Length: 191
Ligand SMILES: [Zn+2]
Image (cartoon, rainbow, N blue to C red; front, top):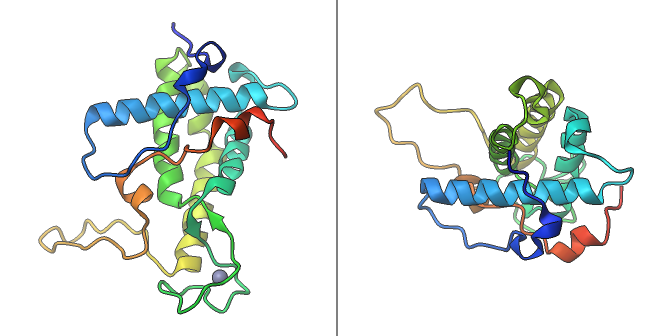
């Protein structure tokens, strides 16, 4: 088993990549590798110390919440007058977060990477119930807050379905959301 160690491989940290629509298998593999390195780095910086074998679904949820600070998707608070509006007419102070689609794709890649690095499927923290519940809550809340629907439209295959207007590029292409500079991770997390 080959464990990727970010410590011995500092130059391999994920760097910002341009979103494009050609989702080739190698692109997915590269993304998965970068996501895995980032997660391992997150574990190393975790206080109290956290090893992969100790990692639970709750820790994965904590990781997803941590990523919100790097998000680029406006998610309105329920008190915002633009709550539920897909195209708000003016700026508002609501926070930027990670789009549900980005988190969902990320978890899929990390779940696969965990098993590729020797993890047992029945102990996969990325497949834990807590993670599934968290992602469902994020999806439902963002759908309401942004006024978009994440329902899969597979019932009418004849009709070509246009992508929802406000789903951001990262969600649509599966591009990396893990583009924070390594300095941020190395400084230690603020929980
Ligand atoms: Zn708002």
